[in-house]
Length: 538
Image (cartoon, rainbow, N blue to C red; front, side, top):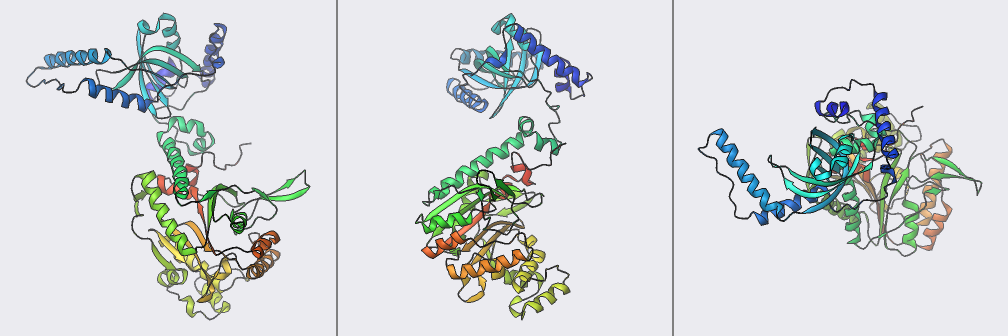
C-alpha cells in the first residue's frame, strides 16, 4: 500500500527500495504456493483495446439515448441540482445496463485507489488508458482480495461490461480479473514520468510504458514505413534484400566496421550503403527496385548521427535525377499527409511547408548566394585553396577545386536550407558514381535535398559507363592509398556488371531516421531509434 500511495501522491517512498522489491517477490511466492502462479498462463482472450472500448460505448450510447435531452438544473439550489443529476444518471445508466456491452481487455496496472469493498484502477494498453471499477460483490471475496494486493506495473486481464461513471468517464465494470504477469521491479514515479534521457534510451521498455509521447513517435514511425512501401508499390517498385556482410563496402564515403568470417577465413565489412548491389539488379532487368535496411558507418554519435541507421535506396531505369526529384517531392508530401495530417509541419518551433514546389539551386549558385564567392570564376585548384585559406576553411592537400566548393557549401549554406531545397550539380570530385553533366564535365547530375539545414537524401543520374567508372575507382583507390579511410575501392564484379550493360538510371538514398525526426518533431535521432547506440556500462 505504501508504494501505491507513493504513486498517487508523488512523494518519494520512505521504505528502502530493496524492501519494496523483496515484498513483491514475497507476493509472487505466496501466489505460487497457492497454485496461482501468473507465469504459467500462456494466453488471454483480449477482444478490445482501450480506445475501441471508448468508441464502442459512445456509439452505443448515442444510439440508445438518442433524443434524450440533458438534465436541466437551471434555477435549482445546489442540493436539488445534485439530486436531479443523480436521478438523470441513474436513468441513463439503467437504459445502458439493460443492453450491456461485454469486453475483455488486458494491460498494465498504472494506478490503483482502494476504497474498502470497491476500488478504481487504470490499465494501460497499446492504445492508451482505461479505468476499471473492481468490487467485492462482482469479483468475489477471494479474487477481490488478491486484486487489493496487486502492485503498480502488474499486468491484468479484465472481463466485464462498459459503463460511464457519474463524473463522465467511460470505464469497465470488472466481472473477472486475472493476474497475467507479476511485476517484480518498481516503475518510475508516475507523476513525473521517466525524464532521465540516458535511462530512457537504455531502458526503452520502461520509457514506452511511462511516456505516451515516446510511444506515439514509434507508432508514427511504423506508419511512415508502411506508407513508404505503399507509395512505392503504387509506382511499381519491387522491394528486395541485399547482403549486409560484404568484401567491398562501397557506395558512400564512410569508414566501415570490419569483422572476420570464420568459415571462409576472410575479412569482411558491414555495408555502408545499398547502392552497388541494387545497381546490379538494374543490370539484371529489374527496372524499379528499392531496399530498406540497416547500414553501418564507423563514425561519431550526435543528435543526427548513429553508427547503425536505417537507409532506403531506390533505383529506377530509364530516368535521371530530374525523375528522382519529382519522386522525392511527391513522396515527402504524401508522407507528411499520412503521418502528420498536413503538408505543413512544425519542427522544434519552425514551420516547414512541404506543400509548395521545392526550391532548386545548384551548389555553385548556393555558395555564390550565401558566401559571396562565384566558383565558376575560380581558375584552378590552387586558386580555390587560396580562397579557403582566406576564409579560414580547413582542407587537405589532396583536395581539388570541387572539394573546396563543397567545403564552402557546408560552411556557409547548409544551415540556411530550412525550407525544402534541392541542391544540384555537384562537383565531380565528390561524386564518384554519378554521370557527368553533358554541358559541364566538371559537374555531375546529382542533388541533395535539404530541409531544416539537414541533408535528407542524395540522388544521382547513375554512372553507367564502365570505362569512366573504372577511372573514378582508380582515383578513389589513390585516395585510399594516401590514407583516406572513407574512400571507395575498385569493385571488379560491379564493373563487370556495368560492362554487361546498365540502362540510364536514376537512383537515390534516404536517411529514414532523419525523416522520422522531421515528421515526429523529435529533437535527436536517439528519440526515433528504439535501441540507439550507447556506450556499455561496465
